[in-house]
Image (cartoon, rainbow, N blue to C red; front, top):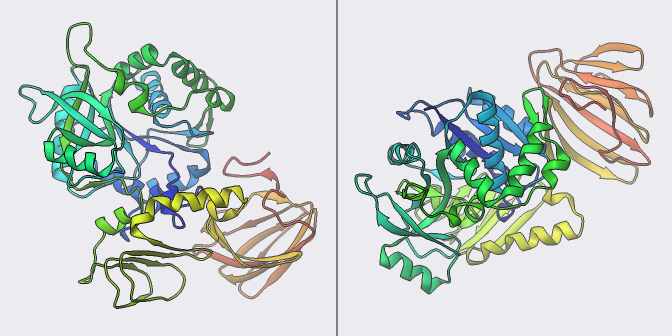
Amino acid sequence: MKIVPVILSGGSGSRLWPLSREQYPKQLIAFNGEGSLLQETVLRLDGLSADVAAPLLVCNENHRFLVAEQLLEVDCKASAILLEPVGRNTAPALTLAAMHRLQADGDAILLVMPADHVVRLTAPFHAAIDVAVGLAGTGALVTFGIVPTHGETGFGYIRKGRPLAGQGDAAEIAAFVEKPDKQTADDYVASGDYLWNSGMFVMKASVWLKQIERHQPAMADACRKALQGRVQDLDFCRLDRDAFEACPSESIDYAVMEKLGVDDDGATQGVVVPLDAGWSDLGAWPAIWEVCERDDCGNMTRGDVLTHDTRNSLIHAEHRLVASVGLDDLLVVETADAVLVANKSHAQDVKKIVERLKRDGRSETLVHRQVYRPWGSYEGVDAGERFQVKRIIVKPGAALSLQMHHHRAEHWIVVKGTARVTCGDDTFLLTENQSTYIPIGEKHRLENPGTVPLEIIEVQSGSYLGEDDIVRFEDQYGRSE
């Protein structure tokens, strides 16, 4: 039976702010300077001994073009990309994936992986998958339990039950345990009976759906209706919004795994396979500090960083020089529009800052100063009353939509490359150092007909400069109205 990787890429990673934002979350970021976490999740499957199909992804619709672009960069063609109009946790995401697989290609063993984890040792990870796949083939619902290295209060735990004969270290699941206090966590690790809850699973699609129908019938019904009302949009599968918004929000653990016992034949349904492969969920900045290379003073640095008398700290610079003097156990993260300074012991509280920013209606929780679009990106350079300046980069062969604005005019100056401009009934080329003017209310389009990235400076002026003042008439990315 085929193994279908199901990659869940719907999180926002608020505890890794300011690097992780709602529209550019942690799974799309390359923390080690190589591939993004999503790309590493896909590449981690290379070399598996089993018959592995193309992955099936479930992601937020706002991330769809970024996800597709990152898959293209690692030469991966997904079997499907299901777009969630709203977040509903992991159980509905897996249910949609299982239903889609059964409808499209029949039953399969699903290897369920969040897109934002790190697994540093591939060989033991593959070995654990082989064991889990064999168990899933018998009808078990399998999760991976991480062999703990210390008493961690930020993770849930799995208590092992009876070992399964002939299955290595695999065991029945005795219980799922909530995040403990420090003393309890230390006791768990000392006992040897507990594993960290990884959030990774292996099971047949048909077996999962049988359990969802039994334990979460409202969820099953909502997911079925959301999939029945789907619309294919380029390479993406758009779910019915109203149906999915009515779906209960629940994790895989709470929805099903904690309710498992034995099946009608007396076989154990819930099984845990221990995994010792350098795993981390990168839930907060100290986890980044732990998995990345550090200097002799215990510092993890990225970017233009100078340190003096600094120890055991994480310093990440994106846009300017960051210098530290006399720091110990601190986090310093600099981006174009925000700087975070925190003690490592208070890293979990970064989400409190994000909550405050959301309450205040600030954009720093949503996007970076550089915003990615399917055609390229734009970056805010300056802004004031009735004007703003942007740096726009258009990929070779790409084009913005044919659009107009009710409240602003635009001036375009080509800095690099060649632009094809449509303004009203006219279409013409602009080269470096040439410019043009787009009046308020005029239909217009910007294209890059060349083989190198097109870079322009755009000066907007008008009474309202919000991104929602766009009326699209044509768009090669399916965004026209």
